[in-house]
Amino acid sequence: METKVHSIHFKADQKLVDFIQERVHKLELFNHKAISSEVFLRLDKNKEKENKIAEIKVLIPGKELFAKKQCKSFEESVDEVIEALRKQILKEKDR
Image 1: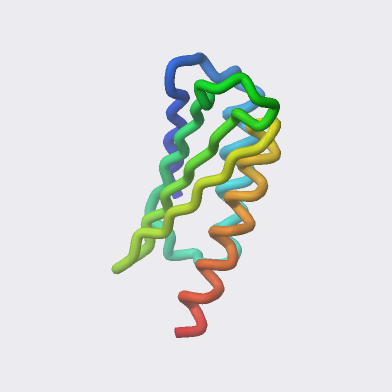
Image 2: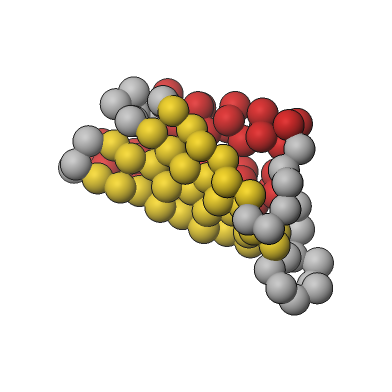
């Protein structure tokens, strides 16, 4: 599965990009038909502690799955988004 990582208004370091790609590729364990995914990272404008937003869109045949989470770190928000997408994928498989 091809994964594109977009960081909005900042430059994501390679360590973060590698972490994201590793996590996203684990979704293939639940649906090996996934075509591609796009990850969007952005900082919320307010200066609160939980200002890191991760959005992930996964394309599977006939469907587009999407999840968005906001947390203290990008790693934490990506983990939560992956968990939400995993649940969506499992729900789709049951149908």
